[in-house]
Image (tube, rainbow, N blue to C red; front, side):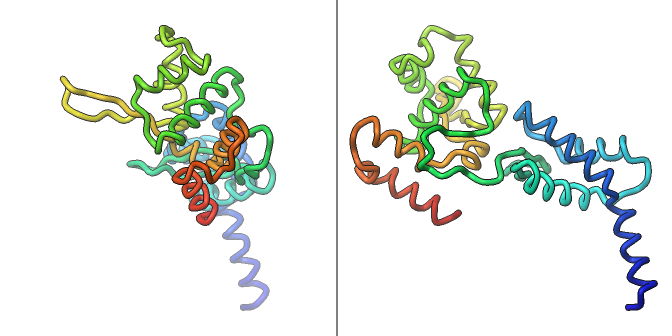
Length: 224
């Protein structure tokens, strides 16, 4: 390839994915991260179209924006396991499970305490918890009064929409039951080993005292 062809190809690549498009896409994603609500691929592409008047390779713009998120902001785009293309913005790396304080991307203090309590109860209960059991646990842990129906919306609406929790329905209408489990954002951000280590400290036990949970943390570590 001669210098002329090389320069032409580079120019075409720059036109397909201009730096300004990447920068604007990064700003959009960082702004949307604050809400924790999943971002539709169509919304990202529509935003790119609205700020960049010339035709660009939107897929390439999103890929490059993701690289900037990782290298500059410490975040990354994660594609959701759902119909349609949607993403969440999460921390690029899970912090070591030996950290004393868990640094997830969730910042609202009261909601954060309830979230960690709920995730701990789910994990130590084998992965799922009935909603009635969850309310009893949070009440006993003095995290959420069992009579606080409005407060329950923190779990059933806010944390569910943000994909920290899933709330699944089972059974016919007259026999419906609801169960909580970890959401995809929690799976991406929060080390289960951290949860288990905190339990071990609280009860003065070794983490492997809880065999199933310990096995789960080792499997998670191997995947990473």
